[in-house]
Image (cartoon, rainbow, N blue to C red; front, side, top):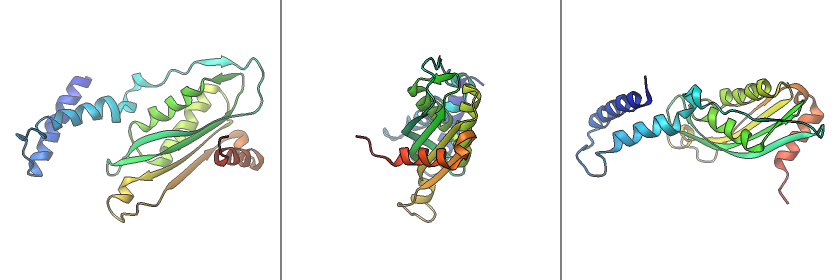
Length: 192
């Protein structure tokens, strides 16, 4: 199905949902909502389902033979819960030890963005980020922690607006307590 066909089908179905909810599709404010929702779903919120949009990760030689941890923290994350299709909003912290290659820091943001732009559960998202980087960098030494608020918890059900969910996936060196502790300490340290 082309993106145009997807948008047309989604708009049609969303119109039906709005009619079932007894919303007036002739109202100036609502009449284009089905098309706006369809465009948002296909081109924005679920663009991570498009395999053609997977980030191409430019890698650089680790010419300085840097041996330390590389950490990008507080990466903004926006996703949708696959159970209720309401937002998940939070931060991802991604670290790795370079093998022979390093990536530009913005590429870590792009990876988080790509995998979060699909219906998700946080546990799966955390693992997908780590597995993708392990494959791309040809190293086992990758870790990811995600802290997020789930609107399926805060705006429905229990309606707890203060709870956060934390998930962590460690591999390689990060399974050793000294490296794991360094990773955690760097995440909580304040920027100067």
